[in-house]
Structures are given as structure tokens and as C-alpha cells.
Length: 304
Ligand code: HSE
Image 1 (spheres, rainbow, N blue to C red):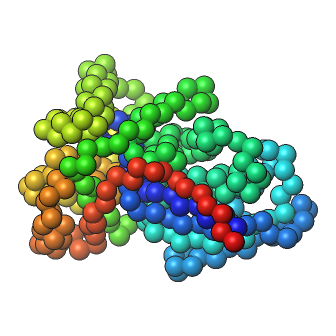
Image 2 (cartoon, rainbow, N blue to C red; image 1 turned 45 degrees about the horizontal axis):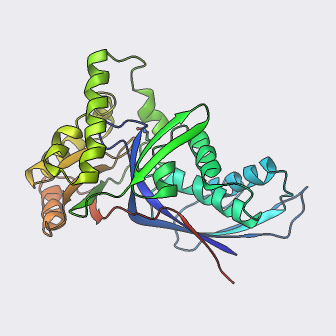
């Protein structure tokens, strides 16, 4: 049996739409082993060990992704036994679907004897997801810059300053990525393009170097957040709360609806103060938790 551990991820970081992402110390755990079905009738045995509501039939994303890789590699597929502990909230902009894709691909690749490299897996995961800014952090950890070019993903993962932590505000409602992408304009002005690309570059360099005074400008965005705020009731108020409490930067996490705030490591009161402000603002459907940047990315181990 193989155990895969995959971190959550927060994509975009404001200006870095479809290009930047960071892995967080929040993990899904997946145990996978080959089942004893037949190629004509593969077995699908799926358990949720933490009670999270996941598909337990062949529509399960980990099962489907693993089956896809077996067939792509020309390897007989007789089914899988999968157990999942799903700590990453689903459809909340924290990379849960990328975590499933990465788990399915890594699990299948390992069970087949690792015919593919990690970079092959990265290319396939980003191709299946449609953009690389969650799949690459989930695989490699750290702060990731990722570019898809001709089906290949070019990435650099770097550690971030140890002086920061990540407060994640998660609402009790979902927002599907396809809905949050459908509201975006197809064309943008050169002014807005330059606005974002300069800030995305500043964000990467500032997080890496610990130039925290730049983050509030680096996180500004004109390509996606202005169009997405109307879809996320409470998000603008949470930006206000986070900045009032001293956050260095605040962004919609991925396509939303969660909100990411970058805070100082030593600000031990941030979460309790934020919880009080959420309650005071009538945002009781939102929860806030603190994470660090995961620097390892997905890991695979054999379990006897
Ligand atoms: N970059 C993607 C988006 C992330 O903003 O649509 C989706 O999680």
C-alpha cells in the first residue's frame, strides 16, 4: 500500500493570476493499493476515514485520475482500494481538486513502479487542472512560480521568509472555479497587464527575501479579484478586517471563496482578534485558521 500526503495550496497571491501559488501546512492523506478486479470490471473500493463527504464510486477524482494514468502508461488496470482523509475544504479555493489529481497521479505512478518523473506528473496534473498554480505547489511545496508552455510546466519553488504565516478565512459556502473564471474578461488593457505583471514579480521576490513592506502593493490585482468580489459575500469586509488587524497582504485564495491574509509570525493574537471581528461583523459562517508555508510538497511512502 502507498500513502500519499498532499498539501493545500493558495493560488494567485493577488497579482499572480494562474502563475503563483503557495503550499500550506494543511494536508489530505490518501492510502491506495491495487484491487483484485479484472480489466473488464475494475474494482472501486473507496472509504472516507474522517467522514468527509466524498464520492465513493467511479466518479471519485482520485480513482479516475489513477485509472487515467494506468491506461496512459499501457498498464493493466484492475481497480483500486482508496482510503481518504480529506482535511482540505472542498470547492473553497484551497486546491482540493489539485490535491486529488496529485494524489491519484502519484499513487498510480508509484504502484506501477514509477515510470514517470515528477516533472511528467507535474505536466499531467496541470493539464488536467487547466492551470498550474495549485498543482505545482501541491507537488513541490514552497512558493511556486509556474508557467505552462506547450503542455510542459516550468516551475521554480522557493522557500518564503520565516517571518510570515498565512491566515486563511474559509466561508461555509462553495464557489466553483468554473463559475469564478466565467466572470473574467477575455481581454485586458496594457495598463492592467503591466499593473499585474510588475506586482506578481514583486510578490515573488518580496516573499522570498522577506521584504515584507512591499507585500501590500505586490498583492494588488486588476485581472480577477474585482470581478470575483461580487461572488463572495463578505470578502471585502474580510479584507478590511485583515488590514485593520495588521496583515501585510490580503488576497482571494485561488478562485475563492476563501481569503488569504499574510501575517507576521509574532502576531499571536491575529486569529483570536479576527474571530471576534467576524462575529462582530455578522460573518459567523466564516472560520479563520493559521498555517505556515509547506516546503516539502506531496510525499509518498510505502506502508506494509
Ligand atoms: N488561478 C486559478 C484561478 C486558481 O484563479 O481561477 C483556481 O484555483
